[in-house]
Image (cartoon, rainbow, N blue to C red; front, top):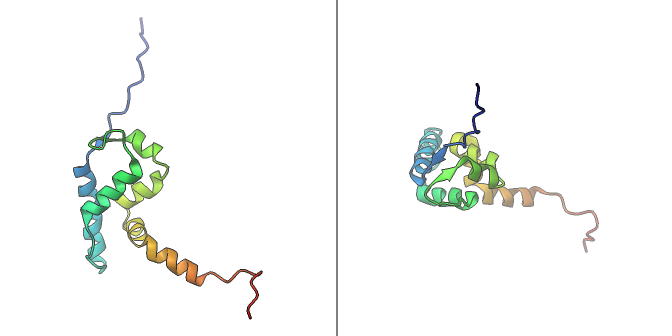
Amino acid sequence: MCVPRKPRQSSFTNTQADLYTFLREIHELWLSFGQTADLQLMDMVADVVDILRPRDRQRIRAADILRCGMPATLIGMLADVNTFWEYENRESLQQQQQQDAPPPDDVEYV
C-alpha cells in the first residue's frame, strides 16, 4: 500500500554571513570592472536584511525572499553585478532621471 507523503517544507536558509559572502563576491567582480571601492559591505547586508524583513534576522528563508516585495532586486543584488551597481547607485540614478525629465506641459514660464 502506498501512503501519500506530506509535502516537505523548504529547508533553504541563509544567514547574514552568507549574505556577506554573496555581496563580497559581487563586490570583487565590481572592482575588477574598475568601479570604486568605497562601499561598506556590512551596510549592504543591513540593507538586504531591511528589505527582507525576515521573521528571524539570523535565518533567512526562501519564504522571506518571496514575501519581501522585491525578490528580483534582492536576488539580482546578490548574483548580478549590474543590478548590484544599480542598487548601490540608486540615489544618483534617481537624481539624474529627475534632471533629464522634460518639464510638465502645464507650467508657464515667465
